[in-house]
Length: 336
Image (tube, rainbow, N blue to C red):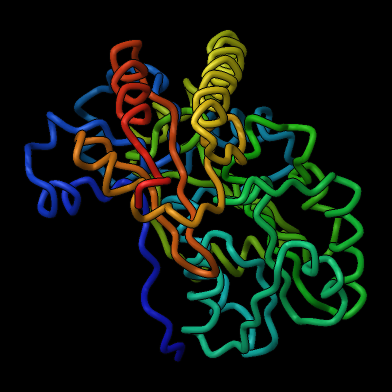
């Protein structure tokens, strides 16, 4: 089992409140990189809560159409798959990028696998050399992007040695040309994770999808067990995945918000890497920036390994934008 500390995540606003004071309502939480204008979840019938959930054909059809997949396994958040997948293989060698979503490496290490971390520029060279290669595309928090052809080349190299390529596409909704979900059913060893939590802003649904060859999906389904998706969750997700008009508007809204956030950070000499849902980057004064913003009851995501880094999600309203701009204007790293 890995001795590495359990990963810390964004969205931990109560910890900020306990440390810096105030109430949750007084804070602006930009730490979780979710769509600040979430899909308006429709009301569901109360009766859906009263019986065990059944397999939902409408959810499966809507998800396959949206993600371009031949077949998908719904799971209780892509995190459920991240935790279960390491148990489906005998302990072996695993390569992950660093920095990246830390749960991947941590979970494989906890299951007894030998995990090695590589800079993004060196990760592709590990394809065909390890049992499992893990790629987040776009990456969180770096914003690193892998072209579709590069990911498929890694998948082919992994398949040649009987290995897996696990691709976490939690943020790929905003850059759909990067996705390899449509290839997962026919590319041996390619496992793709999708989630409506980020783009749709529906993190509270705790819903995700896995695309892979049928034998992998069946084994994963057996491992996770029955009744993983509550019926009200399925109804809400089905509506969101089928709503093309809302999706198109969200793409435009996120693009405009990201451009504004990028310009705001750059105006203050701060890095602005990321994707449409967040911006930030490696910065030697990241800890001081987080503390400064916290004094204004604005919470950002801080990373410390392998170097200081911060990440900001998009504000939800003009008032929030003005509040962030005013707080950044008062930050003076030259005086630290």
